[in-house]
Amino acid sequence: MFTEVGCERIIRFAFDLACTRTRRKVSSVTKSNAQQYGMVLWDDVFERVAADYTDVETESVLVDAMSAKFVLHPEDLSVVVASNLNADILSDLGSALAGSLGLAASANLNPEGRFPSMLEPVHGSAPDIVGQGLANPIGAVGSAALMLDHFGLPNQAARLNKAIETVTGAGILTRDVGGTATTDDVTKALIDALAN
Image 1: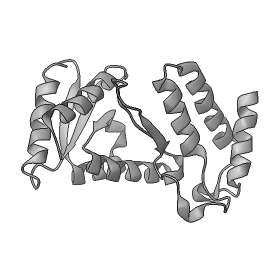
Image 2: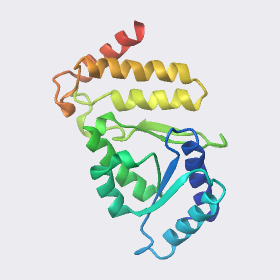
Image 3: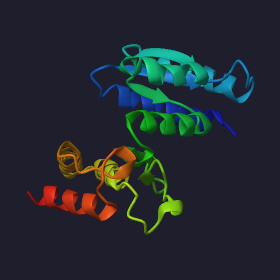
Image 4: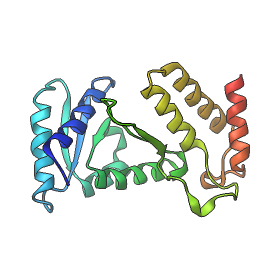
């Protein structure tokens, strides 16, 4: 269920994030043509908040069209803001387009710090493959990098992200992205990359 305050909080966070990017653009994901109550509120709040950020480019895109944009024109995106339902679908699509759900980090942030934030790989805990050495640890380590950045430790976050680049660049990959390495192999390679 949407509230005006909740919509504004996430939308304003998206605009503040866009202000830190080279391309200052926020794309709002909606489905107000079919969901004529909650999503209309979302659209109204988006327009109202956008008026406070006149130097940020904006667009409002239906979720089905945004799915196509993720596939056909991802270069046109900078910050995408969406409700929980639409964002959950698009985050899975985005990580699959990158190669695997195992690659994507995620963060459910409470910017005010009033409540704990939750950071985890997009795929969650993947209970169906526990103990088989198949899980890709990149999403979990990327989530740890997001957590460090959220805690105000950007240098430590950058070290984790550099380790991810080093390991994947060396071709040490789990099966979900075409490799033969196990979860332990990738984890050890990440630790070794951090040690160097």
